[in-house]
Image (tube, rainbow over all chains, first blue to last red; front, side):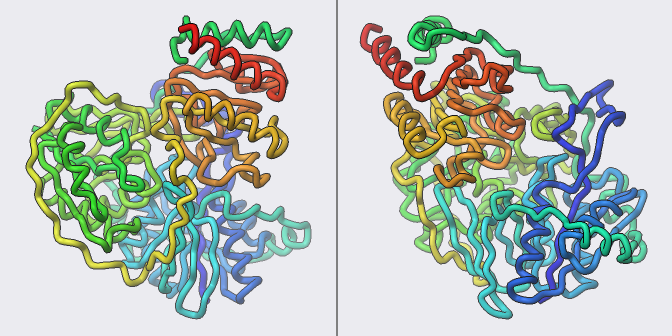
Length: 260
Length: 321
């Protein structure tokens, strides 16, 4: 089985984000592998360990994605591809999906595993759009993957009312939730080996794509500005004897907030 | 005139509140409204769809649509959107909506925006607002395609009383089943429970509950208030609460009139899922817990002591009015 895992370099959401004049202030930002993509990498490596597979990760971006690709290597991924092209700076989900479609078509993969969303945009679209572009079956929000045979996998997804079990014919695309696994911490030996491994860097031309085919001058939608959200201020905090303060708060919920 | 197609949010045979919220917003924008209802044995929902504000009802009613399957559901939406010539296609905030919306957008070559909190129309120009980066920024997004498929955040719009539509039922042909993604089973763990994204009051339990005994204490309070019962990720990971009850960026996004965070410290991921609540009450024994930075009312105390008192006091208030 050949597995392709998509990995995005994103802003670290644990740090403060500041907005000025409609844009995010770059100073002080740090970048990491998208949390959901760490689960996708872990899923790929676990499938390789259990069933045998060739694992490849692909990261798209205009800039240095070396660190997150090497992290994938250190976690156990064998091959890394970086699609690096300046015209991808403002790429949206459709553009990412179009690029991934070309990567997929060059590699003849059996399974694509993507994070269900990226923590910078929180869109949750790319993996699903990729499946549509490829005409492949797709299940999103997956929390378990089991290989049935060379041509089928069985997945569980979190649905609206509980757990849905789906049998998928390969090739297929799945997007995974963070609850699917606990990503491993790379060990020193893996980190040292990862430093020596080559990364296959390609631009759009190498994939046979022009800037216009990935949104270019006419994306389907574009961010006009970023706005700082109205910060929610803490209200009244009560400390003291439990019976007294709880009665006080219940009175406020009833008479001031009028919600009980 | 804008033409808004709302995808009816049907769960376990019932029409959920988001459908009326989306149709009310569409009516308030002066749009022509239609709804698409997908499922099996759903004809009885048609009067509710009319009363919620739809002027046309596209109905795909087929035994093959009983279990949710993203491919066939997307086919039904695309079919209705084309017949109605919709320029706005709105899903409520649900796992099925999030799975289907990008498929519909890709098939229609339309723009797609998930988790939107506002939409405006100026002439033909569509703009939306949506939170991103774990709610740390709001994006203002301009749509360039003239057509937008959107998933709307729970509670973003309010259902307006008195909004009604007209009955004009159009039956859709059942779509071909997806032979490559076959649904084998849906274990409906939430059967008979109050839907978190639909509830007026949501009470969530966190690590402070320690174990099943603590969970049950908080659940009793939820039962008293007829509230949705949710959880922080910590209690899901520890196996005390099921996945589908998790409130947060990686789980359910809720916006009830009252949210009670019981024994929850308030990670940014959890806050991202509940900050839209109108009133927040937090109970936590750590006075420095981040949850107090967003709570309207905070009780510093051990939930094992506070929650039983909370139950009694609420009962007293409700009895005496």
